[in-house]
Image (cartoon, rainbow, N blue to C red; front, side):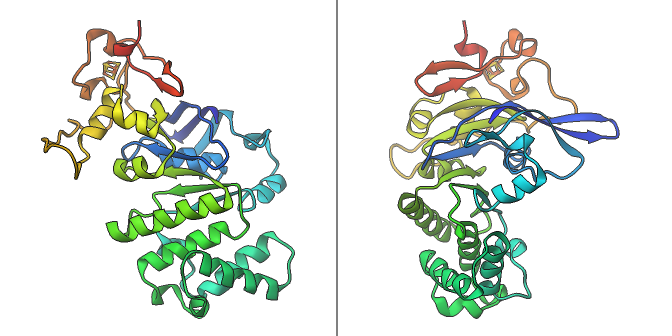
Length: 313
Ligand code: SF4
């Protein structure tokens, strides 16, 4: 993704939801996209697949996938790309699945919609996909309401893997589930990723999950990328005050007990963004410069970039 810009065209004027976001995702890599609600995480994922609904419009940038710019693709080419090359797992499995079709029919439908194979072959594939995500093939004839929340989300993941796409977007894939099931599912996805070699863009507001599951993490604040680094490095030495604030509010089960510190205030109204650094009204280290100058992204070390005046000359 290069310099992506997305605006919402509202009656009172355009509202910029994603402002110049750039990143790469390598083969077999999990890139975590972190940030509070409204930071633009889901908009980035939806722009990547060009499934944003009006009034959202992509007003700039490039999304290069295997050398082709998704933003320039025809509708026919896009249909070939979606699901076959890039699939998407949404937050709520109950809303993604059709309540009046069995899960088997839904997996078979996804396969037949994108590939010319015999129905019997698609059914066989559905059986192996269910097994792949740890569900007994007898469940093929179950309706979504007959499955637990965790099983439903596994079915959605099975559908996303149906055509073995090289990239899977996961938008808050386990938010509606309890922590034990969350962990089980993410471990399973990590095993599948290692086995099948696909890449993941993993979106969540839960920093503890993202730290455990991602290779690298990109932190968004009010539509801008503020820091990106390998996960371990970000955890050990976060440099941006916003990242530090996010990490400061994650409890640790090991190490000395410490007081958790939240980030004061709330994310800005995107219609009236603060001048200078967008984080300045909430930042404990803000100076007068922060209220006027927009901090630019700089490289702090290998693979570690960040936008804050504290770390710039
Ligand atoms: Fe805080 Fe200033 Fe850095 Fe923004 S630029 S994060 S306000 S210190």
